[in-house]
Length: 278
Image (cartoon, rainbow, N blue to C red; front, side):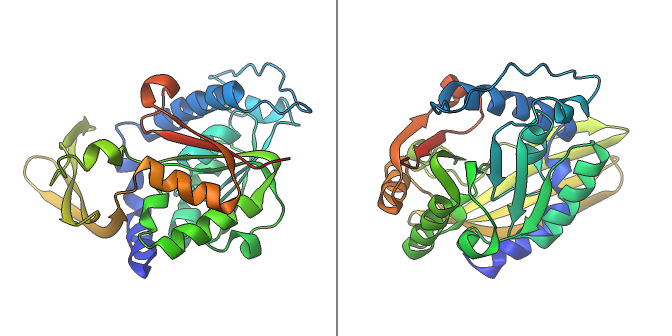
């Protein structure tokens, strides 16, 4: 992972919510989807979750219910989209990211939404030394792992993910569907257009390919029809196939590696789950 990844997210942090039509609604929706997914797939014999009733009109309520909920390390939390969503549903979340600016924004959003969780700056390749304790669940969503474009970085990250997972615990991560993407290597994403408060936002990406790697040019264009402002950032990704990631996870010691499609999980990217043997 190059410094460009950290720089990319440091520069994007204050603009990140603009990528969503309504970021707060996405936080709550993803929290609900991931909570249902976890409850369906993570069932240790010695732990059982009670039914958690969530009052959507009282966002602090989930944090006061079921205080013995599972512990979660979100090691690629960004501005907290999934970490805050899970915390609002009662999970005991510690959220980390390589980008200090993203963590700063995540803290502000968590406070505003009355979400109880802790934060820290950490590199997923150094979690063993930078993050205390082990966790029932270690998660990395939103295509974070493919930023690790070199085999040695992926191996190191997988080892550190394994080190932070409790025996009997689970890793949950999501990546883009590169198995499908690599069939035609698209050069750009379809622009998303949002209109709100008299402003129009246009969000799109341009992908410049070199083998199975690509440089991503990210654009957020904002304007009122007369004046336009563009935020641009650049970073790199590896188009990581599912079987490639499975091998890295198995080599680190994980077992029962399984993939879950968006159709099955309800989440917008393919999800991989893997167990740390008890």
